[in-house]
Amino acid sequence: MISKVEICGVNTSKLPVLSNEEKKELFVKIKNGDEKAREDFVNGNLRLVLSVIKRFKGRGENPDDLFQIGCIGLIKAIDNFDLSQNVQFSTYAVPMIIGEIRRYLRDNNSIRVSRSIRDLAYKALAVKDKILKEQNREAGIDEIAKELEVSREEIAMSFDAIQDPLSLQEPVFNDGTDNIYIMDQVKDAKNTDELWAENITVAEAMKKLTDKEKIIINKRFFDGRTQMEVAEEIGISQAQVSRLEKSAIEHIKRLYK
Image 1: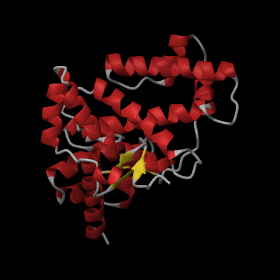
Image 2 (image 1 turned 30 degrees about the vertical axis):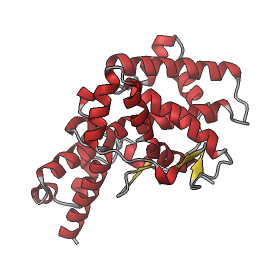
Image 3 (image 1 turned 45 degrees about the vertical axis):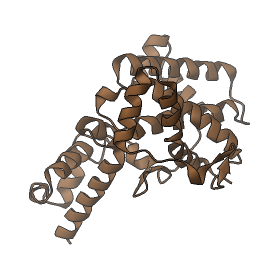
Image 4 (image 1 turned 90 degrees about the vertical axis):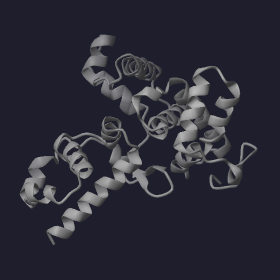
């Protein structure tokens, strides 16, 4: 159903594709109040919404409903995106679109969750969103618990109660050349330099990589960063980080077969 050509009256086969330069030009106009530019920017990013809602296939949800909710997430991303941060719009928008759809699915979940637990979860999410917006960082559970004057266990339980189980192999975005999976957006606090040191001579392997590959491998496997965090720090898209990371790992594997 989600792969159908027409969704919400929109012929998806005819959706425009904007270049990075066109996106930048339109975004400058949007910030100056140009409504036509805003409309063009939305239409030029509807394929992003389509790529996201594909991951929710098989849940029995109406694709038209998911598309409309995803568009709300897209618009919120446009309203909050900061061009000066030198981050690809898609990198910023995908989590916003996913978040909007997940909120919709939580609110329409047939499994009833205690009202008090649900309310606590929404209050915690509000605190999390506030800190992200004001301080541009993720809030920890302890920090949220302190703000709401409850235990960290209550916060964790409330989050668990409104979450749907996900597979780490689920794709969340495809830019036409490579998939980004859930596991690519998860921090790895355990398998860092210890595991690498046990299997290969890291120093020698790293010498064979390009400078950008070295930076990505260091940040991902030694600093435990997510691909999105690395992308924001070095100023490229998450899809590019994913490709460079996989290329570097394959290069190391070939050297040590």
